[in-house]
Length: 504
Image (cartoon, rainbow, N blue to C red):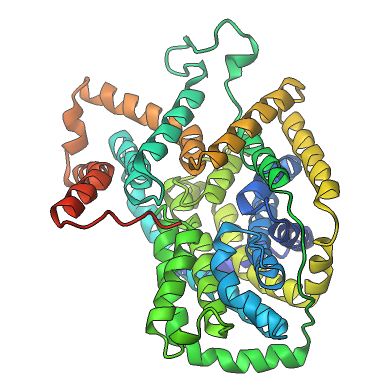
């Protein structure tokens, strides 16, 4: 009941007309970002984050989260009409979405994808509504050792449960820790890795780094690939929507299963991409129409979209309650909270109640608004793809540069952004994951601070991390996660099996 009362208060926050305007603007921008291959939710949020500097934190998070929902919706448009996934998690949608478009069922496929996205988000936001306050109350009992244990679990979970090779994840994370350490040590006041440069005293700004890594890096990669857009046209009308909605109730078991898979992958660092593939694979195996998957089956479009949207939404749960992002986009949003002067974690639910519940309420309304926007504007956004990428790319680069400059009004930040853009490009070319680097860049300082506070309390004894069952179990679980890839490899060798290839 307390959660429902707080949620009603959150809807009261949305009564401000400007917040509704920001929501629709964010969704429109998000769909645009989702439609453009090479960008994506994390990139879009990173690039447009500077736009929110003059807003209140509530309005800012509503707009940024709406961009994210819009990007999740928009990725399906290019997947189905152009067979080009606008987002990594939309790849599974192409398997049946584009064949449906080729058969003249583009409207049905798009309606199924958008509705599936809405179902997944709705399931996940229900989870956030009722579980977040419980987790937050529990987390209020945390001290420095418990917080470091949770940070350690997050870092180790990326190593143990990530889909990339552990060595690459650890390498990316180490680079993130090194970059996070540059500047003034907040505990001792000593300079670290500034090499005599005055500009490096303030360290590397998180926002400039993510704009370069995500925005510029993706643009460089997309320019190299030389995308050319050729797709099917689509028309959605009320009759198509209604006829598609009449078919969806028969898939309720699969939708429930996909939503559970998505929520699990969102709360853990699995993310939306493996969630969509896993959901598609389960649906293909368990559906009575499994043999038709890949030939234009509506169920094959709906299931990955349910899982992807559930994963994207539920990734906010650990971010809000523990200050730990469950996805790259959540990591960027976490950086936004810090920039606005808010400390993510359990105290957020006590000190910034309007902010938290306004955000949760906006997820409900944002997804309803997003569903309406995409169902009514598909032809407009599809037409954008017919603009040459050589025209779109410079515009995005200019937006990135303006965003980086506005952080400190310093021209040097544009150069730093371009350097990070090259790093992001190299990471993608060499197939190194960016999420662990961003995670370490955002959480590195906080993890270091918690660790040093715990050491001060225990007078240097590591036994503090096993001083009670809670912190001991979290640290032990983290260490198991860390060595899990090695254990899995040994077990596979003992069983005489080849190690399963990492799923994309």
